[in-house]
Each structure stands twice: as C-alpha cells, then as structure tokens.
Amino acid sequence: MKPALEQTIAAAIKELFGSEIQVELTRPDEQFGDYATNVALQLAGKLNKKPPEVAAILMEELRVKLVGVVSDISVAGPGFLNFKLSDQALVRALTVASPQSLAGQTVVAEYSDPNPFKVLHAGHLYTSVVGDAIANLLEHAGAQVHRVNFGGDVGLHVGKTMWAMLKDLGGENPEGLQKYTSLDQQVAWLSDCYVTGNNAYDDDATARAEIVELNKRVYQLHEQNDHDSPFAHIYWTSRQWSYDYFNAFYEYLGSKFEKYYPESQTAPIGLATVKEHVGTVYQESDGAIVFDGEKYGLHTRVFINSHGLPTYEAKDVGLIMAKERDYHFDRSVIITGNDIIEYMKVVLKSIEQFEPKLAQATTHLTHGIVKLAGGVKMSSRLGNILRAVDVLDAAAAANKATTGKEDKQVTLGAVKYAFLKQRLGGDIIYDPKESVSLEGNSGPYLQYAHARARSILRKADGQATGHVSDLQAGERSLVRKLSEYGEAIDKATAELMPHHICTYLYELAQTFNRFYEHNRVIGDARQATRLALVAQYANTLKNGLQLLGIAAPDSM
View 1: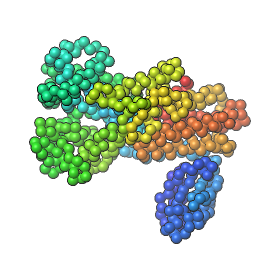
View 2: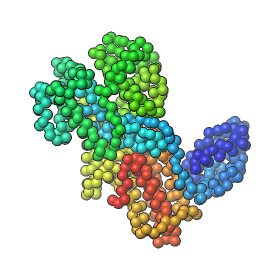
View 3: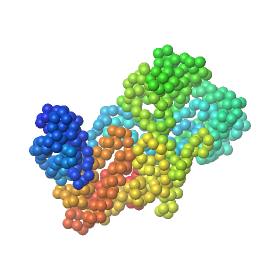
View 4: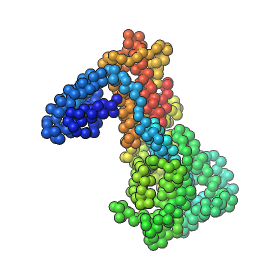
C-alpha cells in the first residue's frame, strides 16, 4: 500500500509541476489520518510558492487519482498533506505481501563467535539472539542466508589455558582428563584454567615465556596434523569439550549454524593473503608485518607478529576470504561487541586495497556490554564475568518466583525480548524481574497476548470468521495498526535493527487491548468480522515473535 501511494504522489508531482521528488510517507497520529507527507514543503522553494498553496493544488489532483483508495485528504499545519485510507483500502493492506527485496541475494551472517577454551559470556548470548533475529529478517526478505560462526581455537588464550591445564595435570598426562566426566565439570575446569593462565601470563615472566612457547606448539599441531602425541590429545580433547558446550548452548537457544570457522583454518589463508600483498598493502616493520592505517585516518596494526605468527587481524582477513570462497556472497553481516570497531575498520580498509568489493559488501554491526541491573560488568580475563548461563538462570529464577512455574519458552522469551527491544549499539542493562513481567513491554507479555487471542478464538468453538469490510471506530484502529506490520518489518530489515519489530508488537498488543475492552467479540452482531480481526491479530503477533526467535504459545 505505502509504496503504491508514494509512486502515485510522485507521478502527480511530476505531472503538475514537472519536478521529480522522492516521496516518503510517514504515519501521523491516528486523528490526523493514516499517512502524511511534507512534499509540499520540499517543493515550495523550487516553485516559488507557499507550501499550503502547493499542498492545496496537489490535494485536488490526488483526490481524483486516489478515488476509492483514500476517503479524505487534508492540508495541515505549514503544508503537510494528510491521507485517510478508505476502509476497503485499509483492509486490502492487511493482505499485501512484503516485497522480497533481497530475493536472489546471498548473505553470510556471522555472529556469536565464542572461543574454545573459554566460557560463554553474556555477550555471546546477546549476539546469538540478535544475530538470529537479523538472519531471520534477511531470510524473510528473500535472501539466502548462511549463518556462520568464528572462534579462536589457536592463539594466546589457548596457550594460557594449556599452560594451566598442564600444571594441573602434572605434565602432558592425557589420562588426567578422565576425572572430568560431565560437560559441566569439563567447562568449569577449562574456564578456571584460562583465568589461572591469564593471571600467570600477566604476573610471572617465566610463565609468560612458557605460554608463548605453548602457543607456538598449538599452531604446530595444526601444521603437522598431530592428533597422536600426549600434548595433542589434551588439546583436541579439550577443544571438543568446548564445541560440545557450544552446541548444547545453541540447542537450548534454538540457534543453528551452517558452518563454524575455527581460527586454525582461517589463519593459514590470512597468512598467505597478507604475505602476498607485502610491499603494496602491508609493510615490514621491526620483524613484523603491519598495515599503515594512518594513511586512511585510522591506526597501524600488526597482521603477522615478529615470530611469524598471524595475529587476529590476519585471521580475520583469512575469514573474509574463506567466506567469499565458500559462498560468493553479495553481502556479509558481522555482529560483534563495539570494543573492536576501530580494529575492524583497519582490517576492512586493508582488504579494500586488494579486494574492494569484499570490503564494501561487509557490514559490521556492534553492541555494548551486557550488565545485570545494578551494573555488573563482565571480564573473562579476571574471571568475574557475567556468563550466558547467569543471565538465563536469573530469568528462570525470576519467572519461577513470579509464576511458581518453570517454563523454558517464557524464560527464553523474556531474555530474548529484553535484549531485542533495545536498539543495537549501546550497553544493555538486563533486569530479570522486569523481563519476565506479564505487564509492560516484555516478551512474556506478548506471549500472553498471543495466548489470550488464541483463547478467544477457541471460545468461538469453530464458528466461522467473516470478511472485514466496513469498519467501526474501534475496529478501524486495530486494522490500521495491523496494516503497519509490513512497514515495521521493512524498516527493521533495511536498518538491521530488530527493535523496530519489538516496538511495533508492543504497540499492536496495546491497540488490541483497547479494542477488546470496548468491543465485544463473541455474541455480538459483528462477531464474524471481529473474530477475523482477532485471528489476524494473533497471526501477526505469532509471525513477529517468530522473526525475533521467540515462541508464541497458544496457552500459558
């Protein structure tokens, strides 16, 4: 509906005034109409006329061109045009499918990105939730989306963990691993070892040197494809524990990834790519290889260190090259914490020098720190992190305290919605009690709203729903809000911002509550029509929640 209206208005402007202008309709308060535009204000200067005069001329022309589509057009304020749709047009807007704006495009969505040998923290939970929602939006728009994951199975953090593991095991003693029989025990041990190794690296010069050597040995395991030595057995076994842990976490969330890129696979690609462009893109400096970002208003970073090992930067170069090799993507979306904004600018700027299309096709989205209400910051280096499980456990406990029940759907709905309703980019303050509330802007509130609508339909006991045509006042307000669904989805997709869907669904639920409070459904003369509206409302809530990765239960 909206695009067709915009095209008609643009055509009328060209016909009347010989001017081409980009028309953008907005949604005013309902009392002023269904759509509004400021095109008259934009045109006034070009035509040397006052905005209300231009608006009046355009209004008369559009009343002819939009017969049957609008029931009223008016000029307001300094020259705004307000449009009220006819009931028939408003109802038709409910059945207009969203355009498949990304049909035929291949998109790689990379998110979550946990590192083996370290615990999953709240940031991983956040990026998993947001990444799923963004990938869902891209798929809804027609794109073929490949969901991938990236993590460091090599690197200094692995050397730190391996150092502490060997100390605890009494040397290269794989048999010592057998005492850790459950996944919880295995993950807890790896987490403790990382903290121990990190502290030793910072505080003990001898330990630091040993960790550096272990880091080299881990790289050599991959280069030599060593799976048999005692050291290799410890490494591969504990790496698999991490992957088992990640898989269990994703299964609980309902997340699915097509491919996992470990750094051990992207490092050789990045190393070769960087070396290939030494002298043109990258330069040697004190035994290392760097990219001079200062030339581009950025900063210089090391891509291969003085030991000849690839840094995170080179591994990310390898990752982008691997994603292009595997998928030949039209677009790559990467979601990370905002602590690496400047880092990624340097990586992408370096790639831009030899593969400009890949850099231009890459969108880097970032987010802030996840904290519990009261200000708990995470730091996996210090061991006092806010873990992913801490957030989920806090939500489950808050829900049980509120309802007396344990409900995975509600717990996940509470956490996911609490994350998604906030605009992507800033820090996230998570309040467990607020997130599980059945009142206010929460996931369980919307889940309950859906269940309530389904309950109304069940009470109708299979009675047929009717066609929506002429609308009464309360009905029209609900239909008007329902008609905005496609626009909310389009905006969220264009901006890669799922919070627009959350805002819309909450407003929709409030609109329905006002409708239901003043309009009897079952037993009313207009029962068939109103049942149709309830069904449309329930389906819209369900579709929106599913795009967010949130279950829409039929009962609660």
